Length: 144
Image (tube, rainbow, N blue to C red; front, side, top):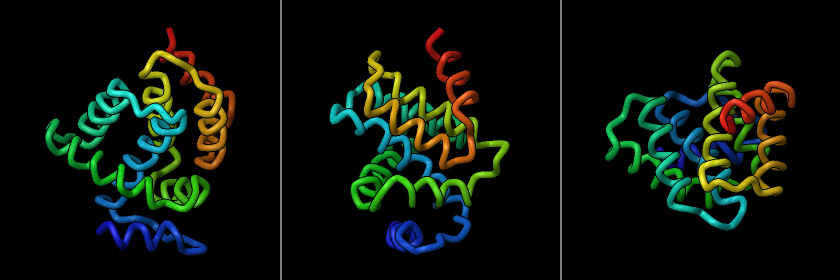
């Protein structure tokens, strides 16, 4: 499954991902967001696990296992543009705001808004078809 996802992420036009790969791609994006500031904090790891468990109906153990796989995937993914393209193809538009909300929750989990994380979030939102206004509304809702 892992090799298949890496291959799909590096193809010029990645195809739609089956559900298990979709989970791994979303988890990989969350890990990428968390690692952007070069401080992969425990609060971010806990947030990723909680988000994965809630989004996919997983046990804490299953969510932590998926996150572990996603950490390896994120290290191998060539760039964020291809990564988000694979997610955009896998996640319907009406569910992408939930992905952005999860990503903002991870970015804000350590209590600091890093400029690199903010820049990456703007790119990710745009690549997932979510405009800046919607992304900012989601972020502000989490900060309140």
